Amino acid sequence: MKVYSLSGPSGTGKSTSALAFAHKLGVEAIIDDGLLIINGVKVAGVSAKFEKNTITAVRRAIFTEQEHREAVKKALASYKVEAILLIGTSTKMTNSIAKQLELGPIEHYYQVEDVRSLKEIQKARFIRQTQGKHVMPIPYRQVEQNFFKRLVQKGMEIFSSKREKIGETTIVRPDFQREYIEISKHVYVDLLTYCCNQQAIVQKVEHAQFVLGDQAEAILTIQVKLPIDYPLAAHVLELQQAVQESFYLHFGYELDAIHVQVKVALQKKKS
Image 1: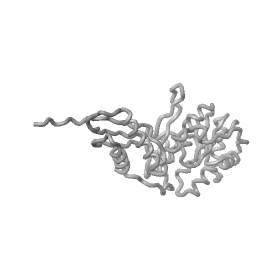
Image 2: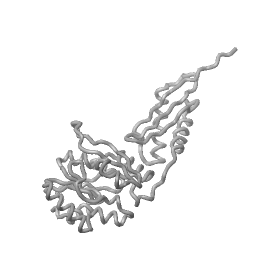
Image 3: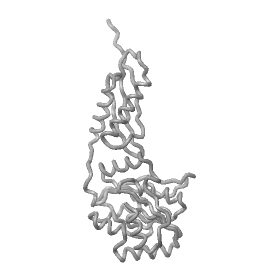
Image 4: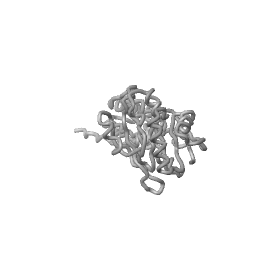
């Protein structure tokens, strides 16, 4: 069996990228947080995200409990797995998983920076820190009954480069994830509004909105000062750059898009 390792700190988006990365490597099986996932579907194991605290979650993730460990080993044998990707917070952790499951030595080691951009990692950390959300690389139908008392929502469908569906993700908030800072929507709006008002061309901010989904976007509608005897496009670009810099300064990651709609206030005719 070929064994691969993907490691990186918690909250950097390893599980989000796992399905696409495994498919790219030609690997059919993934071990992630105590689960054995084959071709995008959970086939054995119990997720560490069911645990009540981080200590038992780590123990679950590295298969210290015999019954859990033996169930996964049996499934690996019955499915005749030829290649597997182990996901962990460090190479020490993935080596421990390989040893517990008797998979043999890890042949190839990858870090999260090998599969995700810095921008993607920063965004993933922001979501973990401010919303406490974790991603499981398995379909929603396989977790919703077990997480009925906690946050659980559909994530995204994962496709190969040839647009072949290779799996789905599900978003959960485990019981042990108690330490996160929830930021009210008006904080984002206030920051965006303030940034706009600092620009010399802005007469009024009509609308400011922040959207955090697959993309992190700012949506702005501004009235500009008259007369327009200045290079408008260049000043709008400056506004976008100011918003981007301020957002990164305060929240630690960059927006994917900043949409600006420009309106010109009609001047009242003198009677």
